Length: 319
Ligand code: F6P
Image 1 (tube, protein in one colour):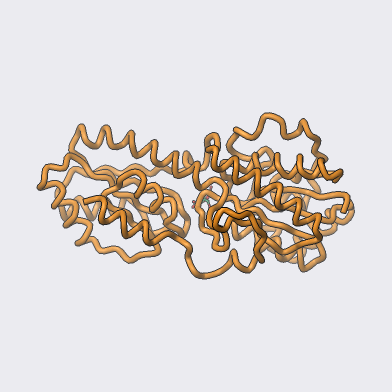
Image 2 (cartoon, rainbow, N blue to C red):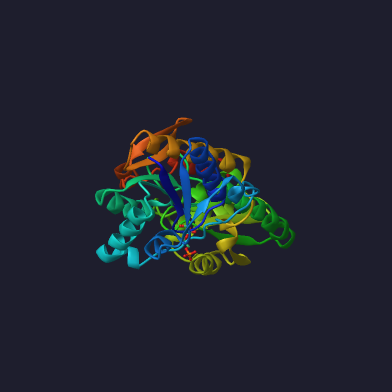
């Protein structure tokens, strides 16, 4: 193998740049030519790529976002789009592709693998919603961002004796809510993986309030519905002074934490090793602190990997 390419796809996540850097520099170390594809699969369809050198990835390990830009390509979902992408790869002599993204991106990778391209995935999404890996690149940074914001909200919440509903990201997963909720001491956590009971939440709120608690924070994962609607119902049944903060895309930005830079570097290096070993159709994962390759199919497992023990514990701790 002489030529490989790397792209980022789907929602960006802090640490993607560190992964790109690792792929480029590990590839160059092994005498490969490494191409960066712009705007994910859309760039592949439009042949928008550039050869990368050591300096192309200088000074990016600490930067959020992705220097290769990203996109969610509708055209790539069609057989014609996939064919164009493969033709461009082949015309450029590229035999191996590394895709940094989420499970939707890996479904696209599987199609390319079927058409004869060797593809390795690296899980990058703040949602941490990919089974088959203990953690995804960007999740740790997003959780730290959420915690720093919860701390700020607590200051004003306690000054005013208010209940805050804080809506966090997670398209269909409650991982950010659970990790940040437990670490941030939230009074309640509402996630799509568990039914929730308004009566239980309002009971707990009122018990705290009657004991003299000056404020409460309820974390809602966006995947279960709007924080506004939940806040309205809580306000009506408790009469508490309630406010809503939707954290939104601030969770996707910012300088990656040490953990995310470390994880991204190890995963980027491993992805190149797997291609050099003629492997394909694998996602790089961290499993019990080991960096391994697992079949893409594991990333599509229906079983949510959310830490429900942490979710249950948070209810005990946040009395
Ligand atoms: O998948 C990451 C994510 O940030 C989700 O948490 C969120 O639902 C979605 O992307 C938002 O996507 P967009 O940036 O396209 O609005």
